[in-house]
Length: 272
Ligand SMILES: C[S@@+](CC[C@H](N)C(=O)[O-])C[C@H]1O[C@@H](n2cnc3c(N)ncnc32)[C@H](O)[C@@H]1O
Image (spheres, rainbow, N blue to C red):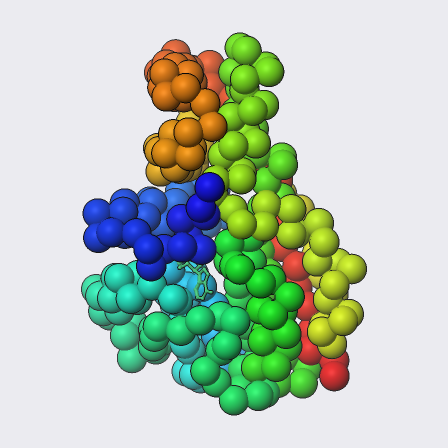
């Protein structure tokens, strides 16, 4: 089982296109904007702020941030996947914001910026995918200026669940979706006890239940994108996975869909 975002550089161009489409369609979903706006509003940044988004994908979060706060400081997005960085560079150009942010390939375990460079670091649905979350926390702390803040936003993926009449198989599919999609599905519940080890003080934190009942949009594209990875992992007979997916599609058509997951936002300050 391989987290496609962790091992994105092992995937082919077609898989990259699908993941790019998923990141962009997720960003257009009102659920995504609501969760993003909530922490951006809490940050209330000055234009002269220096910002880094780690694991920026196609750059949706950084585009939103530089637009909202009219950022004039340094704004960088880094991601390990060159196709994602190319997409991010094109998309910010389309929005005529390319003078406000720069995207470059990089590994978040070894961020290529000097110590104490940024006022703000954002990790939006990154930490659940990385190989070594603790190394990433240490890098976040290192590149933050003293007093700078980081936002770590992600899901707690044992709470990821889809309605399915066969509860026993439904729970197995939920677990398979979490383990095939995320290297660290439970990391968000660990972070409050880990921040202090890296000179990071939690200054705000909250959770949001993302729930779709009747219609499916956010969880539709999630299933469309990641169920193929469950199928490839051969945990179940392929027909069982197909029946599960058909049932989800039918539930959406009939207005009987149910899916949910808890997401958490942590705002931490560099205190060392
Ligand atoms: C779910 S995507 C989130 C993208 C973006 N933050 C967003 O919310 O649209 C996770 C991203 O983390 C990136 N990533 C995972 N491990 C990484 C690493 N070690 N270094 C850099 N990027 C990494 C993946 O390439 C992918 O773009």
